[in-house]
Each structure stands twice: as structure tokens, then as C-alpha cells.
Length: 178
Image 1 (cartoon, rainbow, N blue to C red):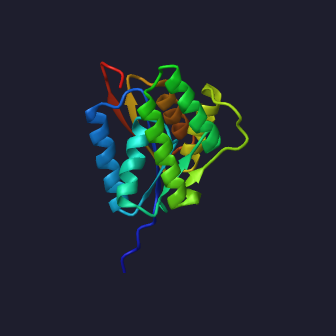
Image 2: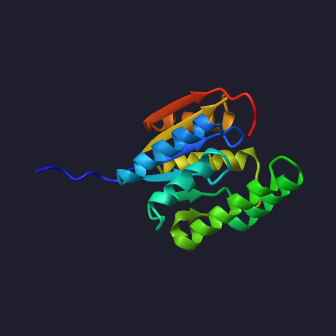
């Protein structure tokens, strides 16, 4: 008798600054394969790789029951933060609004898929690192898309290695920020 495959949760970590066409294609291909195999993704709800992974996962899992997005704060605070970063010129207003719409849609599809951190009132490197550690802890494996030696992705890789979580790392060099 053949043993039934157990669903696994795969953490997705990647750069928010650099998401080249090559990185996006790899993320979409990997997430599509994971969704088709019955596995789920865990990610941090940021721009770039997280946004692409969530977008692809929703195409194959519209109920969002195999998607977990862990935010470093509440969705309301996160949206305000992204709008502020757009006002500062760090990201485009269109990027901020697309991310906010995606996370709002995810929450509407499955409130359990969006895990908000109500304890964190502000966002900084520490709260982002805490979120990355939680994403890794919630997973059985990590897929890391390491662009230009991103410190945040390296932190997730280090967390996974410290916890003995299998890690698949793809390394890229991007010339221009996107």
C-alpha cells in the first residue's frame, strides 16, 4: 500500500528590493509546483519575492487554505507603513497599494491565512527579523531567493540552518533595483 503524501509548509524568503524577471520566473515556477503537489507556502507579506509568491499561490489555491502570511504588525499598521514609504519615495505608490490590496484580498478569502502581530506597534529591522524567524519556524523547509547578498534573506537562511530546517538557496546578482 502506498503511503499518502503529507502536506508540507515551505517558507519563501527573498528580496523586496530586487525582483528581476529571472527571480520572478523561478519563484512562480517553484510556487506553482508546490501548490500542484498539495503543499503550502509561508511568507512575510512584503514586496518583491513575497508578493510574487503570494500572487502565484492564490492563482492555484483561491481558498488560501495552503497560504500563511505572517505580518510583523497588524495589517492596518503595515498598510500605513507602506504608504509612508511610498510618500518618502522608497517605493512607488502603486507598489504599496498593490501589496495592501493583495493582503486585504487574502484576508477576505481566508482570515486564518493572514497572521497579524498585534504586539508590534512599529516596524524596524528587529521586527522584520522577528517576522522572518517566525516564517521559518512555521515551515518544514525554506526556499531562499538570495539576491545581491540580502541581509534579510541571509537572516532567514541562518534561522533555518540553526533549526535544522532543510534549505534550498538560489543566488542571484541584480544590477538595478526594482
